[in-house]
Amino acid sequence: MELGDIREQLRNLNEMSQTLMKCESVADAVQKALVEVRRKLGAQVASIFLFSQEGVIRRVGINGVDAQGEPIGNDWLSDEHYKPGDSFSGKAVPSTGLESAFGEPHYSNNILKEYRDMRYGAFYENKLGNLRCGISVPLNSLNRTFGILEVLNSKAPDSFSNDDIYWLMLIGANLTNYISTFRRREKQKLVNHIIENFISLAVIDKNFDLKEVYQFMADALVGNLPQFPDIMTFQACIIRISESEDLEIKAKSHTNKISWSGRKNESIRAGSQIVGKVYQTNKPCFIVDIDSEIDKFNNKDWIRDNNLKSFSCLPLAIEHKCLGTISVYTKYPYYFFDSNKAFLESIAFLTAAIIERVRIFNELRKVRRELRFEKEKVLNASLLVGYDSLLGGFLHQYKNELIDFYQTLERLSDKSSKNQRDKDLLLQNKLRWIRERLSEINTQFKKNESVPVNINKLVYNAVRLILSEEEIKVDPNYQDGIPIIYIDENKIKSVICNLLSNALAAISKSNRKNGKISVITDVITLDQIQYIQVSIEDNGIGIPNENREKIFEQQFTTRKDEGGTGMGLYITREILKDYGGKIFFESKVGKGTKFFVQIPMKRYMI
Image (cartoon, rainbow, N blue to C red; front, side):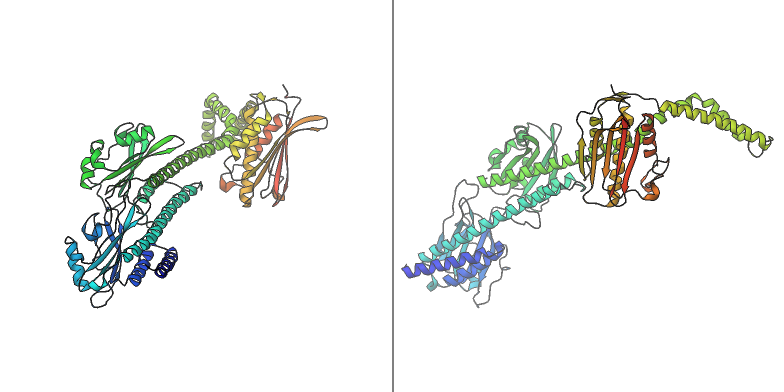
């Protein structure tokens, strides 16, 4: 080859490389490569075959003309495929499942005579008008062969030379590099897609179903996602998750390439069979040739019926905690190169991370429900528990008197013979008796079950209970050195919780995106009396002027539609009154409200 010819070839190769790098799909790259090959070699037909999931090379593109000069379409011999070593085309690729093997080029200028076993030879001869010359070169990458690039001519004068074979190998190397890069990019896109699904789990109000997660991952590994078709070599995928000591099947890939019928779906004990050992040891297993190790498998008949040849099982582990396993099968001997193992291990890790994230989310949702229940209990039941228990005792103690009162009401109906004055007198006596009993209940409720209390700790716990799960900024400022005082912890805690809940509701009504609640504890002196003061300030809607005088009245509420009872601030004030304490507020409509709680220190210090 002359120097000028070499330079021309290099220019052609550079142009070819630039053209391929602009392609957005393998199909586009295949067609552009075929056009360039025919132009450079003057070949009548050029074809590209790539390995499929079945372990055969299948034609993915053809460019050429028939005997009449008409273009040959992709629909001609659309299912053309060959096993490694089969016919003329298959001889250029090595057997699958080998650790290191590369295809070798084959060519002939008398192809039908030298390759008598050439399948479809008669079809090509008829289509082309004759068939004499052919080159089949492998698309070799660093550690595998992707397929072949093939050219055919119908006339002997158009025979191919060694230079043609060499140039075709260079074109094939460029195409192989593109295919390899494209597939790596597509696999990375798949990984990114999985990561996006993982990140989306941070949206805590979204309802995630683990079944959907399992199925998504199983389908992803067999190329069954519409946005990622044909980038996987695996034919089947099974995901098992640990249920106690058993591994239960949670998902099987959706595919029409194998049949799941006849397969046993029973659970597997940890430590038993291949899957159980992978789970127990937390180490992956890669089997290139299932037939040689078939005794290790439980579903032997199913494996044989579906002609499955290679297998891999990986632990779904995160932070050394194994959650289950993910298994994949191929239909041809498949050597798991380090890059394949790394890809599968990354998929297994992401699957485990998603599963664990959903589990944590579900646990968090459960805790949230419990927290909401606890809030309700603190804000409602804890305020009224004294009344509830005393009222129960009251009903039990005065059951007979209440029955008598009911009977008296019946006797005082319109049909009663008593005059109205006697009726009124009798009713007044009964009502006075009820008021006296209610006064007894109120006196009992005001009795303190006092214990030593650290106010800072009490306020801190109340803030955690009411605000820890809310998307607002909490600005705490607890003064050091506040002394321990002797008070009823539950009652004072209910006071703080009620004010925090009201602040939260005020912010919610304001629709602010930057909601903020400030909580401050300190010691102040008023009229020579020291108080422990707790202030709670929000940037909510504020309290309208017309409501300020009524805010502490019994049964007054602005949240009746939300279940407000109008008892919270009323009982809060009554509790603080019993301690000689105070509650008051400052508010600006549209700006927010600040409540102050003051408890005198001297009387309650230990």
